[in-house]
Length: 204
Picture (cartoon, rainbow, N blue to C red):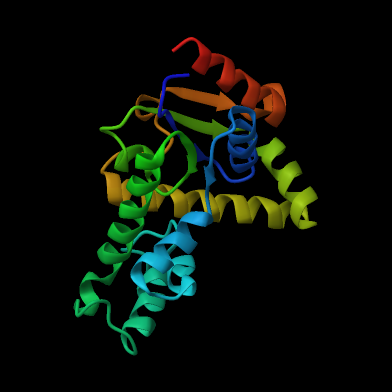
């Protein structure tokens, strides 16, 4: 692995992308960032973590995002910025945090347009996917949900992530040309997928 290699992971919901990212980080002995980015962004901005959690991978043009951010903007202001620019402000704060994490050294970053934000860096961009039936099975196990409920959760979450990515990057979420590797996690499982990525890195 090259010095200061950043691994970014886009993932379909239920594909095990977060788990694979964690395993890659553990195998390489490097930091792993997912929800940790929200905590860091909140500390950097002085805002509540709840604000970032509400906006997490939620496109700024969505109705839900507008309602949440509009309600917050009615009682709070961000560094004197008008409410209309709050969505872009939150994204910029999180983008700055992602860039700062990448500057510190090699790490794994999950979601949040990290591949696009760090496009000028030495990154390995991954997209983790899996067949719907495998993802339903995984979500049913984790959430103890019925099949129909699990499929609905998956569909809604994937749509939210796609809208967020497409809105802020101008690219298409999950499109092969945006990533170096696209991995079907159902083939090798999370352990095998993580080991494969580490082997790939050894040849770079």
